[in-house]
Length: 206
Image (cartoon, rainbow, N blue to C red):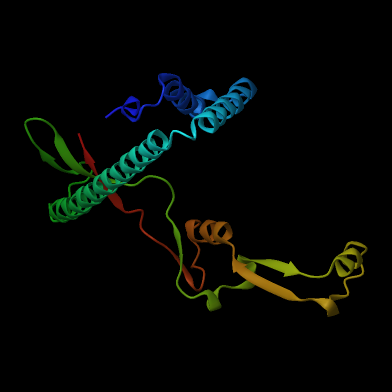
């Protein structure tokens, strides 16, 4: 079904097509912006001149609503399908990980399933081990950072070496993850309330 079926001139259809071209990200720039304003003005002038053609304008309106709703329904359907495929992929990954983890570990060789067209292996994650706070109350002050909220006047006094903290409104102490990581990674006895989690692994499909 084309817009010309609603007795609208091809010129107006061309204007709307050009407007779509001017609204894509690649068409950014002052020249495109100016032309877009001109196109919108031309569309408005055309509709104003043809508004007496009630059947044509109404018919095109209904056509555009119908196509919009159909496209929206199709997008929703495709989104639901994508979500269903993603859920199936998650289940498949979990089953593969379980199978590979049950295989015998051999130093220097990853747990791996070989096929005729490729392989599936369990590979250790890179990077540094994440810090896990198990009990924030136990974290010592030397492994914390402090966020202080105070009035501007009090801040001025602090900067002038007159730390009158009587007006302190808020003081929040948060774990310093970098300091905690460095302490735990150095091999010291540990930081109360924090541990380093394993790096974990992921499935690689070739």
